[in-house]
Length: 131
Image (cartoon, rainbow, N blue to C red; front, side, top):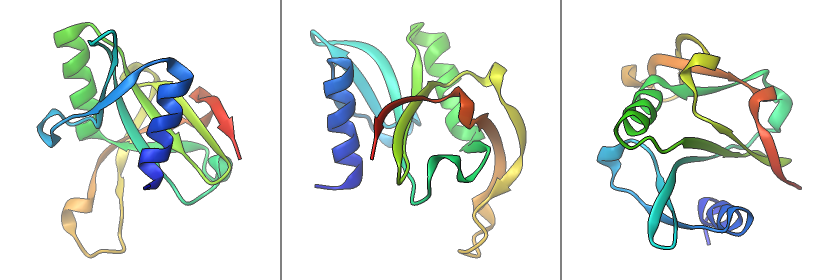
């Protein structure tokens, strides 16, 4: 089982829901369902560093725009769930609480990896599991 699948199972247990993987065109990873109705949308990330290694979590502007569009269309909240090496946490995707910049991966020599991003303070995350 992949790391993402393990985290997805924990989310289902903690929040009494099931997760349905969404097509890539929606921009976020999962729809969360209760009683066969969508109750939220989730972007799930697995990282290989401790939670507090950086003061902020960086999320692509594309993900933020996708979450905002889903919220405006459905009035259902979107959440970011992140698994770090020492904890799993979540936060609402709320662009009003972020600051913005240009950043991204520089190790793949792909110019599309550098893009507008939102920085989410690590303090915004609520812990659901510690390792």
